[in-house]
Image (tube, rainbow, N blue to C red; front, side, top):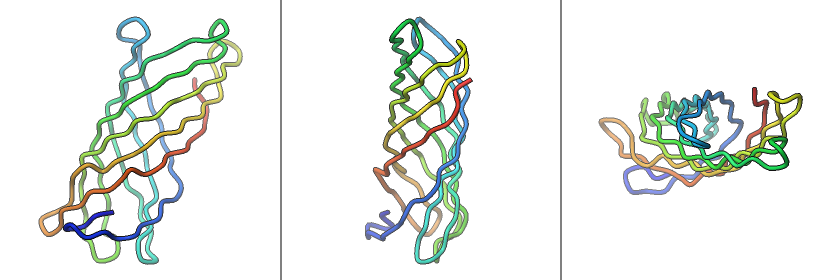
Length: 142
């Protein structure tokens, strides 16, 4: 993570999230995502809360039993005070690819791999940016 043009080491941890998306045209989907990602800095840990707008393209394989959905997300994130840095906000960007194995027509197991950037942000005292950070997630698709 870069704070006022100086690099600082951070570690990432667990990421939890949820999203809702709807078809808008053909195989294109728009949606909203909410993620909480753990950030560790100098023996302290805090969760970054990110809310974003998703654009996905759906590719269906094997009569819809396998879905491949590349996606991009532009968002706004908030991080409470961590180490010596007060509360901060960020413009964020994510790209990732979801793979969904569909069971029973509607429910599926989802895996996604992607990258996350905090493009710009900070507070009155600090300019902060970071990334890319690797995202590996799994869950259910309903």
